Length: 448
Ligand code: IFM
Image 1 (cartoon, rainbow, N blue to C red):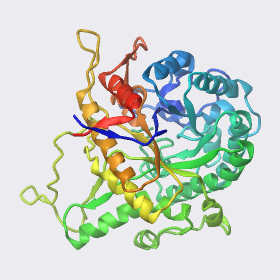
Image 2 (cartoon, rainbow, N blue to C red):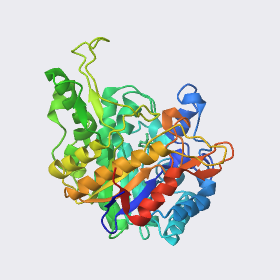
Image 3 (cartoon, rainbow, N blue to C red):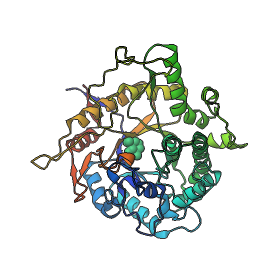
Image 4 (cartoon, protein in one colour):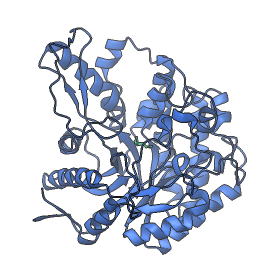
């Protein structure tokens, strides 16, 4: 079998997020987060699951780093829980919280693993939500205080920072559709939240650069190609507006183009929360863009009725993941080459990609996950295609290092390279983990 080689120094890693793996929701002086509150509210999370214990990474972090080292990971993308650092969101810093991440970073560095730190992966301090959450400008101001506290303490050792993970999800799933914390359903709030998330990013970039000299700072967006279900004009428009909301609403202001007018007009949006100077702040140049890519999105316009006899979507999806997401590796190439052409950042990382499958421990105690291996192989090959097309892609983080709390789905979705038994917290590397180890060692993936 022939091999596709990656450039020397290509950074292979894996990713997790604080609320999804840490547990210890009330330890070390941590304040309550919106995800603590949301998951403790009956009916919000599948099977009533919570992140109270999760993978107990807060206590097992040394073992987890040993596991990463054994896998040969070059980099690890983690996130910091804001309520561990500032239990009430701003004001008094909690040294125990900072110490936890400081030790984690030291251990990673000692293991030869480069820490990529995300400052916000959705666990907002509940006190800030009580004062308005992301729809309130004051939350963006508090975020800068938080970013400064973390960068000051870790900035001598962490050189790769991500301000936010997937602001689209925080804004729209949290404030428009109500399926994520804090569970609100208000479109205007959602667009205000999106704006303040972006604003907080722009304000924080120079602060992190100042307190973490020589570091690179970026933001992570969940991006997806938006395809029409048919060649009809109505479907094409639906796809265009889907692209505007999911991709361009974040990309355009980051590169200084302001908010897309087509979506503003189509939804009749009032952007009364935008103040003078905001758009310039959002466009503060970053050093890279983090791309989280899983699948494409197919749009059917409500204007055209779809009937059982006349389905308008005939896309093959023979191999869906347990999230129901189509396996669509070509979308990664499409996305990365589009970014290079239309949104030229100095560098890109795939900061998340992976798949949930119904993994089980076999009689031999092993977890064999050939579907995940096939999935990753196909997506890695598309990343290699994008590199060959000149995209400055510097690294790839598999989501996720280990099975964890998948938000509204609770523990029902297993994305890990490592299987977690939630009763015993025992970790078992899956076949895909061993396969990924080889990819990293050889810096190459088998061609199909
Ligand atoms: O688990 C999430 C992660 O927190 C953000 N990106 C998508 C993943 C899979 O849904």
